[in-house]
Length: 290
Image (tube, rainbow, N blue to C red):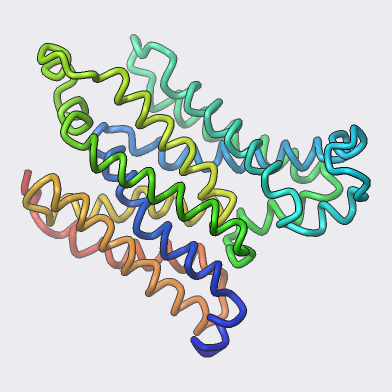
C-alpha cells in the first residue's frame, strides 16, 4: 500500500498514532522518574478490561434504552456508535487500576508483585469478558492484537485535545513534579503542593491512557509509554532534554513502525513497538549520564 492510499483510508488513525507517539513518551518519562514505569504496562490493560466489561454489559444498557431505539447488533457492529459509552468503561477500568496500584501501603516490599498480580488479573478479565460477550470479542481482540486502524474524526477529536492538554499541564507543573519524583521529602519540606500536583498527574495519566487505549490499543500504548523514555534517559543531558528526546524517539518510532506496517502488511501496534525497541537500543548502549 502506498502512502497516498494509506492516508486516504486511514488518515485519522495515522494522525492518532503520531499524536500518541509524541505525547505518550512524555507521560512515560514522568513515570520513569517516579520509578513507576510498570504503571505504563498495567494501566492500559486495565483500560482494555474496562472496554471488555462494557461490551459484556452493552445488551443490558441497550435494553434500558440508553441508545434509543437502535438494536444492539447495529451499535456493536459500529465501533464509532458507542464511543462515549466505551470511553466511560475504559476510564473506569483505568482509574480502578490506578487506585489498586497506588492506594495500598507497601510495607513489605511487595509493590512489584502487586503490580504483576494486577496486570495478570486485568488480562484475565479482558479475555473472559470479551469471549463472554456476543458482540465485543472481535473488537477487543482487534485492539489487543494491534489492529489500530479504526479511528475516525470523532475519536481523534477526543484523543488529540486530551493528549495536548495533558502534555501542556505536565510542562507547566514539571518543576514540582520532577522534584517530588526525585526527592518527595524535600518537596514537602519546601512546602510544595506535592499532593495536589500528584493528584493532577494521576488524573492526566488515567484520562490519557483511557482515551489512548480506545484509540490505538494497549499494546502500542504501553510500548510508547515505556520504551522511548528508556532510550532517551541515557542520552539526555538535562531533565528538559529527557522529556523532549523521549517525544522525539516516540515520534521516530511511530513513523518507522507505520511505514513498516503498511509496507509488509502487518498490524501497526506491534510494528510501532518493535520500531521503538530498535530506536531505543542505541540509548541502552550508552553509559548513564545522570
